[in-house]
Length: 84
Image (cartoon, rainbow, N blue to C red; front, side, top):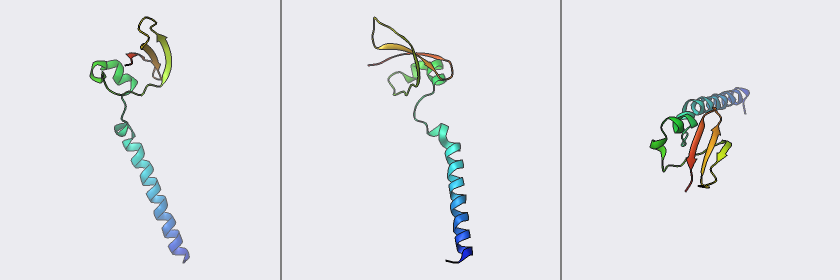
């Protein structure tokens, strides 16, 4: 292969990779299927019955109901929820 063809191919591949990285960064928030901790805290009633991905520290487990708990989310907000 000619050196110019290889250089052009490498440039096109690099530009395509960079474009995919920019696209991923721009669409990450809108493509995330789960509610954030802030959304659950401010508008919990709208998310009842839906699927949520909670990552955080289990702050308190209610002993009398065994399926209700409070999670301390990464942003510092407390989210009280229950499971089925």
